[in-house]
Length: 602
Ligand code: F6R
Image (cartoon, rainbow, N blue to C red; front, top):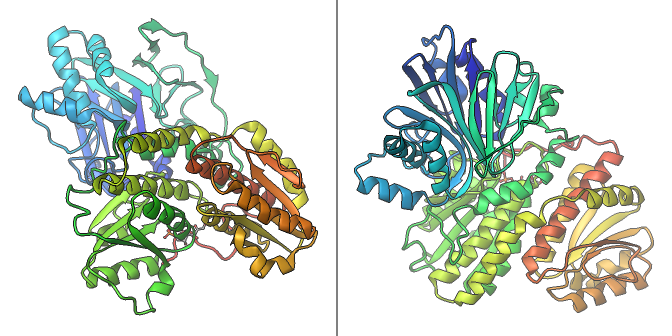
């Protein structure tokens, strides 16, 4: 997601900001910009696309001596990736960069517009700078105006603001989005992660949610709830690659841990208290739609398959899911009342892209759910919803899968509401469950350690079966795919009830069964299927909130009421299991053999 940098000092702020943004490229972005305030003049520049475009646009700008500056890489959420929507956003005399989502921006914007304030962009961020200037005109004190602005904002943010009336200070705030301050003897830096600070700062201050303040080149004034906070400085150590990996051994591991945060980003401004809102879709989007067809490959196919149960069960709309490479050549019968959805992390998968083109040619309404804005699939589809997982580096997809499932679940509710097939009470309880998911996806150290210890027992054998029922069957498929991709061990996902129709013939002590046994959905039925395997001496790793005597190994999950809560918790466990087995086998977790992150060939 977006990246933020800031600088106060005597060195070239332009270079420091641009280099800092380059270190944050891994977070993903579609436009970038900087603003530099030296004496009383502000220079600012923004560009769509790669940082090279911004470098080119700013090549003639030089700053000598003291200056302050802010910079931003934007991953579009509200409004397209255009120069006007890129940050910094400007008012009459101030500039702001922001990471996160201001949930109540529409109310603030309407109220400011009714007072005659003109907006240049479609973003939620722009309200911050106008609100600040309005408050400043009333209060005549920059910091008080900034504090008053923060009090009006709901949502997640990391904010840097500079204003001509205070040309030596940066105002900052953090709530739910990352922000770090770096210092050395005579300079001060801001960044979204350690990476831009390495080699520049000696010490860092990790800001906590709810903290805000202002900084000068040699002074940080930090507050929380109106009280001054003592500054805790930590030495900055590490190299650039490990900084990008945030101290994790592999990007995949980091991405598993990031799931809680990106799921929060994914639902922000979408899962409201009483309804689901997708600003990407217009009011009449589902008029005349009687059927949904979803097309995707690999992990994205699994997210579609899992949520197809929800489209039928919750939204009462007939739904089928197809593997894109199969769909292309089956001479499918397509009807105009079908909404054609494609799912893709990269947005470049050749089979999915071609399937999308076929559907468009047949006159179907098309929607893509994608993690990369401006990708070929996003450009081709009539409508697109971004997954907001941030850039995913590990070839084996984890956080992209989590956000795809989340978007599709919210979409099922959106349709259910639109078709008036869900009661207010049920919708409210679904939304409550959605908001609980980020918490459930926080990886507990005890859980990770347990799986690490357990993994040494699963390095041999003649294969794995991941089994589950209902939505846990696609999760079993995904668990098996993760394991085979990075461990090179044979693994299959299977519907638990289908084992007796053939695969049970393989059961013996060297057949490892990973049994997904949720309490909230078909527990007794799944249990019977696992008992059948246990009776044939298969080795069972049971994942369940219920103790299960016949299991050789057992991972206890939280007892949750909603099956999707159990789904996300078990998803994390299967990902960590694959990761730890792969590490024990000495494999390259992030770049498994024979695989590519973006499959642009048929
Ligand atoms: C598995 C994985 C692949 C992709 C598949 C489709 O971990 O990443 O199975 O899911 O190649 O890719 P996208 O989602 O980019 O269309």
